[in-house]
Image 1 (cartoon, helix red, strand yellow):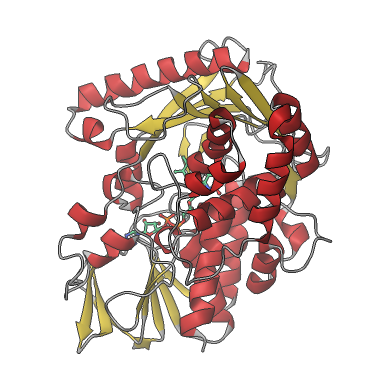
Image 2 (cartoon, rainbow, N blue to C red):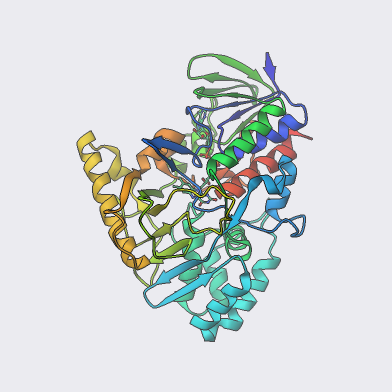
Length: 467
Ligand SMILES: Cc1cc2nc3c(=O)[nH]c(=O)nc-3n(C[C@H](O)[C@H](O)[C@H](O)COP(=O)(O)OP(=O)(O)OC[C@H]3O[C@@H](n4cnc5c(N)ncnc54)[C@H](O)[C@@H]3O)c2cc1C
């Protein structure tokens, strides 16, 4: 048996690519090492609770009558998923909170313009000019040369505080590099977060989204093998001919599309990339995160209606790996019940999620007891800090259950080196590798987040596998 394409990974990019290829009659098989689909954007159960691992919010929200080339509509069209099936509900509003200023944004960009003008009157015109530049920028050009986003944004905005406030959400939701972003990546995030905005599928959230995708894949004739890791990509004369699974099975294929990440994929190849003979050392990302999640008692009234709060405790925002196991200096607070749900929706249980930067190395070699204690201390500190920022109290006293998603959980369940959610700082925008018919999609192709990952899977499939 020989496949037209084997896809490594049943995360958002892998499944989107799989649907696309299956629609066109390709014999496609997705191999996933974990026992659950979704990759970084998945869920797990503890007692009567379901914890989500990704999905604070889907970015790129637009209404169904928006221009047809909007990323979300393009994505749904290519996957043949009706807009209404996603049951997307918009955010209430979100905040960027720094000690000297707060900005407020919704899915209506004019609100953000007003908020910037109110907090930074001297920058109102500069921000308008920056927005005009970013809006006309073609971030989808696969041949874009890397350029510093900080340098470019600072050509327009004079206030270092406003520059940092603009960077904070965009870096937290998609930067694999410390303190600066590549301009094309910045524009992707700027448009998807500020110009379009946040939404969430109603009812079961992530599960609704995953259900739609995996049903579409199997209806289209695709094959999915769970608990089937790839341990080796086998090539002959510079071209992939097969993969070997963790169990030792050899599966022949005409092409491989990997969503596992750049260093992770290169380390599977039987012929090393001459540029990166030791991929883990030279390519693995250094930015890891920890997330504290509380499932709140139904009776607890969460007295804050913001959907997401991005914060920094200092006006100078630092986005870099901390020297300690975690740092609360900046972070993201997500309250998933604060979307505009409708009466007919089955609303999710109340939750409170706090994400901040972490140091993978400090979590790596702990004993079971030390690991447990660190998780407990992280949760307590993260919730107490977030309560102050959100102006609420009683999270821990009203938690029916809490859990911590550590950098180790990420590497264990997604095989991401060093738990780096946003992957390698080196991206392969064209999706090509040193092996002819081995392609990359997802995080390390450079389109991040849930929508970005799916678009990446579609783009790479259209470009190389459906021609
Ligand atoms: C806590 C958290 C919060 C987030 N919040 C948001 C958010 O609010 N909005 C947003 O848009 N994004 C969010 N994200 C990011 C988003 O989930 C990811 O960017 C996106 O899901 C990445 O998809 P991917 O397909 O590129 O990679 P992955 O999801 O990493 O998929 C890769 C898959 O490959 C599998 N794999 C790896 N190696 C092998 C192998 N050798 N053999 C077989 N299988 C293998 C992995 O198990 C995994 O399932 C969040 C992520 C986390 C962890």
